[in-house]
Image 1 (spheres, one colour):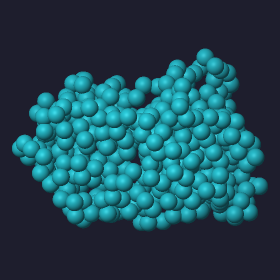
Image 2 (image 1 turned 60 degrees about the horizontal axis):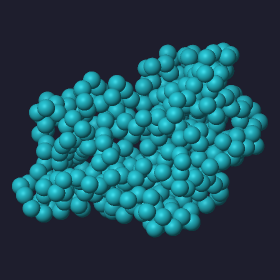
Image 3 (image 1 turned 135 degrees about the horizontal axis):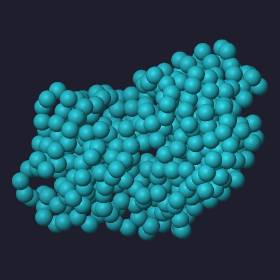
Length: 435
């Protein structure tokens, strides 16, 4: 490394932010200063939240205090929420009044959860539960025990504008499995509601036979499904929905009774980014080029769920595009190398691979899909239902929590998941040139 010391700030302490900090330290060595800013003192492993919500996992088992582990890699940590970004000044303003200056900023905040966009929706004063945050899942678990003592109908799924459909399916199947273990499944009618034009679309136009496989599993488990359905409002015990036709026009309104409901919300960018022209789109997602760099502010990069990706196709109801773990890991690696090269005056050349790999637990079994690239036409489009996916998801949890504690940067999906799925590593590298 040559050149003066730079200050690289990572905004966000989740999967993308922690990975970014460790990969950045590995790529740039000890010469540059790295600071992580997060509104929480802890990291929690979001993919395990569906387990927390049925008490298969304790929240503390998937939560890691960040400061001491980041410090071992000489990474500074500020556990204060950002309230304002001033990109023209290269500054982040925090809730306690302090201002943090940066030479490079990597935005890895994840999303803001748009519960307020639907009347009566969400865990904050609404009538539905969430698994998008460990605290939401913890509260859902308490409600789950109360529900199981007095079971009734369940409404589960996602609302219009959602982009993360895997956890909705996952939670539906996990609840079904838990109810069967308790021998009360016969007392619980279940309905899966989704804005997808068909079951298994996933915001990706489907992957392999995802439509047929997921429809089959829902039928086999006696879960009624309602695709192309919009949630209008939620009242206590009732979800008001509109089933739509292929053009998005109203076909039928229904009132779905529930004793327990979990619905994935739409995502948007966090409030400190909203309205910054050239940095974010109207929903607040960070605009990036093929190098994960913002075109207006080239010293700002974005990784993970917070970035803007245009939908693959027009659908009757609005859908977002998912950003899976493998895609995030590849974004992080590209940004780490691009910032390191830019510090040396080499320019940027590394690109993330926009491939999708998803693991969803279903109780005693699981579903895995691989889409290389994410959007069709694809070199690989593959989906599998198998018991080993359940164990693979457990392995992913173990790997990532260990990564947070040890600063391990080895890419899980290349060394572990892809190997077990029988996909040759050289094919992944071929499809993902520039990683």
